[in-house]
Image 1 (cartoon, rainbow, N blue to C red):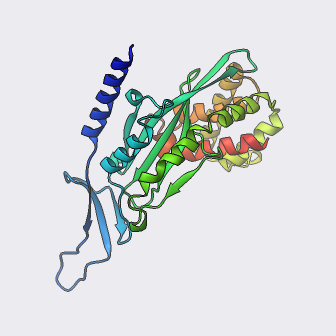
Image 2 (image 1 turned 180 degrees about the vertical axis):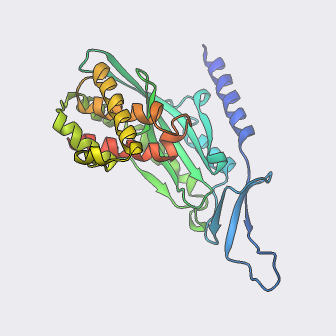
Image 3 (image 1 turned 45 degrees about the vertical axis):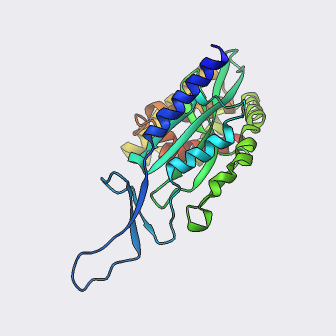
Length: 292
């Protein structure tokens, strides 16, 4: 594909995303009953109406998706690490949260089973309109050998700010943060390679599972059938990953990400590992795998 075709594909992708973005409206809530005063609470809505995206206080000021995307484009237009044609836009929780995903490279090495282990790395810009979600930048990985995705939440790179009036327009300062995020690629590669070198035994696996799940494995026989089912399925995912990845901290981590991506209740939702309990479980798995 030549340069002109690349540019054309990039512009087409950008235009498609722009046409998908919505305006956000903040509307005060009223009881519509005589003698009852209106609270200082507001509903967040798409400009086209419909169900509320969330309920917020008076200080909440949304980052408008179109302005946020324009700021993002200004930062990456001349950045060779980001292909405009591969940017993706995701609406999560019916639009209560949105995310722009930008592939920036790959991490690849041979795992201790001798297989080439490759993960696609993306930089994500996320915001929300539910009163709970900050505007943030973070890295995520998508492992090709097993199609496991996760937020790389414990890299040194973190940046976020609350959606309040004082932070309106702050997105235009993201350029430096985006450069910092892209610069984390070598550190992410180093972290995964390190986890691949750390062998684990059953005692370490059990301690890891106790920390990640919060379940005391010594009480297994007293667990409810639901708890036992969850733990059994996690162990099955870990056994599967040990078989193709090796009995390492990296295999252990990917046992959890296999569970959250393919097995857990809710895993059929593609956003489960980004904004729901799958993201929390993956965060803990990465944190505690690095502590082994």
